[in-house]
Image (cartoon, rainbow, N blue to C red):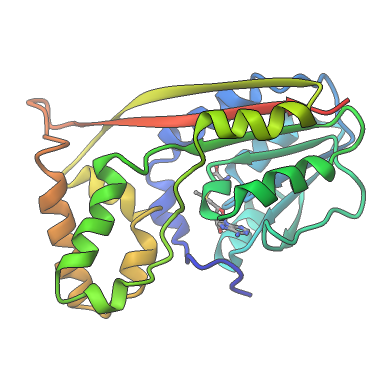
Amino acid sequence: MAITAASWDPAQYLRFAGERLRPAIDLMGRVPLATAARVVDLGCGTGNVTAILRERFPDADVLGVDGSDDMLAKARASVPGATFEAADFGTWTPATPPDLIYSNAALHWSGDHETLFPRLVSLLAPGGVLAVQMPAMHNEPLRALQNEVAAKGPWAPLLADAGFARGLLSVGEYYDMLRPRFAELDMWETIYLHVLQGPDAVTEWAAGSSLRPFLDKLPPGLREEYRAAYSAALAPHYPRRKDGTTLLPFRRLFIVGRVA
Ligand SMILES: C[S@@+](CC[C@H](N)C(=O)[O-])C[C@H]1O[C@@H](n2cnc3c(N)ncnc32)[C@H](O)[C@@H]1O
């Protein structure tokens, strides 16, 4: 089943597993629950975070939900103690209200947050928690150049509707929407300074996530040309350091809310 607009390459995504797990763990550290009976990892991907949620809540039923069959296959193989379900964020409905809906680096792939977020809050059990981390990189060269380069070359007609990750609402809009719905609300932003190794490191990073929908729409040949043009456009913004590393400043928005 391919529910999501984007397709996923688990191996490419996991090349940067360390950098990508850190915000997940930072988010988990702020979840105000000592125990939980039902925990959902929404947009669980390959199950890396699902496994950590199982350790954090050993008595809970842990369910991973994702729209990608490739990701779910890997998750099922690597986290045997959890259950997994294929569903879209917009329509997924739990059989029993969860105590925790946890979502790391996933909800930005879905649009219409004005509908999605209130809906997720309404699915929680009394006292339940929604914990979300999303990249807030849409105006940064990493993401902006994907669109700019897409609009200019021979690939432009094929990329006109590339399903890239949506821009987020403003921090204030999330606050105004969510504050009345939660008894407690904690929001913050962090800019991580990822230190990437190897040549063309920022393009490699993007190829595991936000660049994927663009690459997937192009035939071989044009795909490599688009990727090379994107890489060349990125280079002045993310120069390689003397020690061979490349610094990628990466802003992320965190939202933790608890209903009454
Ligand atoms: C960047 S990965 C994050 C995976 C995992 N949470 C982690 O932290 O490693 C985003 C995941 O969201 C899933 N996804 C994107 N849009 C979706 C949608 N509308 N419904 C369900 N899953 C979706 C993708 O299939 C992908 O596995």
